[in-house]
Image (tube, rainbow, N blue to C red; front, side):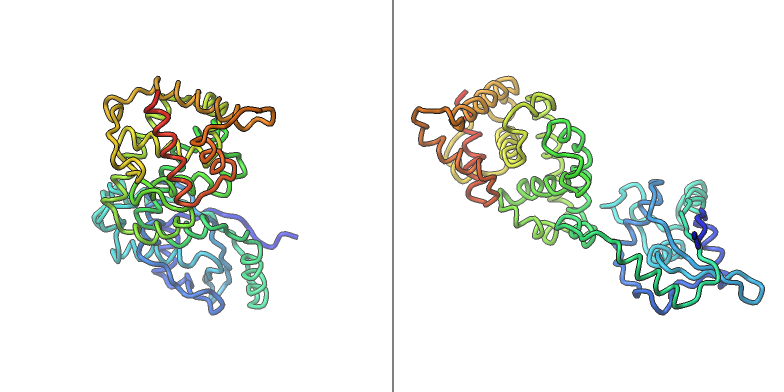
Length: 356
């Protein structure tokens, strides 16, 4: 039988209960408040943008004729909201440039009103004994799915790189899905964010092993300038790619395979933006780069390359595969994400486009 009610309360409700001493944020069995200022900023940005947050779980008991509400799950979220309303921190520019550095008391009247009216979903338990609360809290933590590497990075970092990886991944997720690069299941486990992070890291540092993604989050967590530059190049590169292929045509090519899309993306970025700087091409002048780059000519080259790949990898192929193709095919078949193989694949694509 159901032992809770589902309700909606506004931020102003929680603020009123707190000021009246009718909100307990620190039950003994809860984890201590450990959120960083970045985490708090990210939550407040969620409210300012009017986006939903996970539900809060509270218990309600009648004490001396008044309802006392104890937070079972969500105390760090509520504590962050109350601290923001007390002007104890501001939203970072990384999360929201519009409200960066602005205290709650400095918001416009209508902005404060919207903040106070923001609704939080709440499950309410009534007159629940401690042993029952402990059981519920344990159950809440039992049903969590084990996080994959990208989900763990998402949980642990809240700076420039993480925010931009999410922004780029979400921005192009639909295109990548239509192109067959990701399935719904892969998107559900943040595959688009992982790819975006991988590509952003390459635009900042140069082509690296996929294993280096965690180091990108670490090293560029506060590198706002470098990350912003990479985001600009990312957008420009995707704009060019969309001129070369629409999603349906990309789906029909070998470049819909994620490791080959990675290399094709960086090849286009090298030809149009000069990054990443590929060691094997350092002494060459790319004559059709930048303003001279032609998406239509690149499409012809990439179509031809995809067709040749199919020929040379067909089980019916009886001829001699050119030496330069052998290395590319070997690196492509295994979907290797090592730095050297990635550099070789990307260089091969660059040179193929130049040669057409």
